[in-house]
Image (cartoon, rainbow, N blue to C red; front, side, top):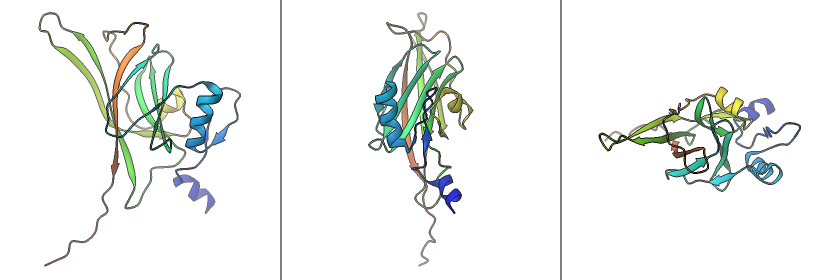
Length: 181
């Protein structure tokens, strides 16, 4: 029964992606480990709120996002392949009447068209996949979609890219029979 439990436990251990580091722990401990030992940037988020994030160069952009007081971790990666958000969890998708899943909207603004004055927006709205190792390779290999970022997106001062994102937590409604009356 232990192996079955590991597949669904939200506290199942996740691995540190840093080379040579053998840390293994639940998502809240991984958050502290990555921030303190490896100086990862961690940003607290609230479900349903828009967050504006300036990522460094697309070749190495990553940010750990912490929700519910660090109980849930998400990894935002920006690479030459695009932008993606995944949930950091060794557990499979949760099930049952109170099961939850996550959707993420991530978007970037293109430059203003000088002829029309309009600004195009490139957006992705997708279900969030999960991975047990918060790395670009694991994130890109996990379920879910990636937002390709056009080369015309303006870079802020200092380089990189400005992203806007929102993570929503959805709770599956339990089905109960309707009372007949």
